Length: 444
Ligand SMILES: Cc1cc2nc3c(=O)[nH]c(=O)nc-3n(C[C@H](O)[C@H](O)[C@H](O)COP(=O)(O)OP(=O)(O)OC[C@H]3O[C@@H](n4cnc5c(N)ncnc54)[C@H](O)[C@@H]3O)c2cc1C
Ligand SMILES: NC(=O)c1ccc[n+]([C@@H]2O[C@H](COP(=O)([O-])OP(=O)(O)OC[C@H]3O[C@@H](n4cnc5c(N)ncnc54)[C@H](OP(=O)(O)O)[C@@H]3O)[C@@H](O)[C@H]2O)c1
Image (cartoon, rainbow, N blue to C red; front, side, top):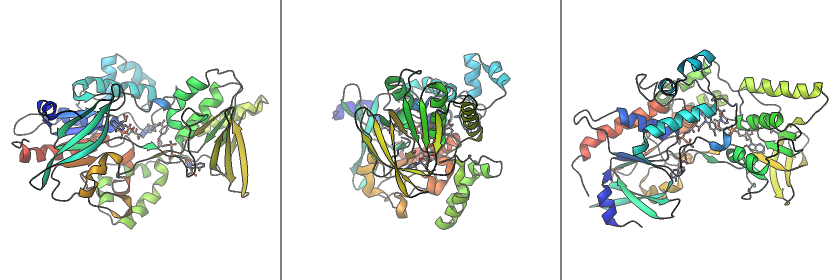
């Protein structure tokens, strides 16, 4: 562990952000632009990111897949349209402003949006350390009060453990791949989760002319994108989509429903009793999970129709397939499904199987385990998150622990997507700035 001397040299941060994906990038932008009204100074802040460099869901950077939100909902515009961190300014800097506008399409490819995020990360490079995995946060207790937190992290390249002190932390580590009950994936096996797809396809299935047998499990956006990608790019492959319902269901991005992503909806939902909140959220459940962009559904349908025209049916959709188990045999992977319609077992053998079963966002995050005794609980959903994204805590814990992305049950559907990142980051930055006055003179 790093010695106390080094910690003292590094000093105390007002805030340490854990993870440097879009959520904490938006916070980095807000902290850059929002300063303490009295001193005119920015907060002393640092982000720790486990990846060696900025990249957004690298395993899903499918060549032509587009973002599913207007690019005006970038890391800054809706909070500060004059920010230098907007997507439009990125285009201007890169010399593509007019060509982009000429496309007349506000939904750039994920590859371009990833490039924008990396550009912002580059602009904030003095505020981040890459290749640092945060392991835990420890309370620093003095005279019965915890005003400081000790953030313990590991340098991924060297394995060295280090620690830094902060008055606040903002955890934004994203979702983690979710697997159905009873499903385990062998590292490097023929079955893999969608989050590593493009990396695994490139490495293990490099020959785009080979007659591979692929199975894609799930019917959300990831599954549909991968089914279409395999069907179109592996020209001799046999591709099966195993889905648990009748057909791919389109995302509800219709005008009225989409208002669930308005900033005021966070206050509205947060203020409702739990069962009423669920009523609204059930009404809006097709805005995000297990749904597919309608234009992609149409492209898939057309591509399958075209296969019929030329008498070459290499792709199919098998409905009502619930994945129950996987067996790696070395030469293949065998998937066992429950056919929910005929109540029988169905097996499929494949060279490669992609499990597109989404992500989970656990509020009771392993990184918070050492602080857990301080946090208030909120029914079944774990720690209680206040409206300002701070974890409600025992009065002894005066240091702040904020979460980004983990409060969908109480704050609504915008929590896990890009939609309101700048607004949420602004709320957190404002809270941190107002808390700063109270601790300005405090040192360890
Ligand atoms: C394939 C895909 C495409 C998507 N496309 C869209 C879209 O078009 N529009 C939309 O609105 N939403 C989209 N989403 C939703 C997505 O959740 C958000 O886009 C966004 O990534 C959330 O940002 P985040 O920073 O909260 O999480 P993440 O993007 O997951 O970033 C978290 C970061 O934390 C780092 N990290 C994790 N653990 C540690 C640790 N212990 N120590 C240090 N660092 C750590 C990770 O390496 C990562 O860089 C998409 C999701 C997926 C999976
Ligand atoms: N281009 C883009 O912008 C893009 C690309 C990819 C993902 N995303 C986003 O990323 C988020 C996650 O999307 P996702 O598609 O990865 O996950 P998801 O929307 O959570 O979908 C998970 C899928 O797994 C299925 N499933 C779960 N258990 C199963 C089992 N045992 N057997 C068979 N199927 C099972 C579910 O089936 P049911 O339908 O029956 O529940 C569902 O279809 C969403 O917000 C999405 O919009 C965006």
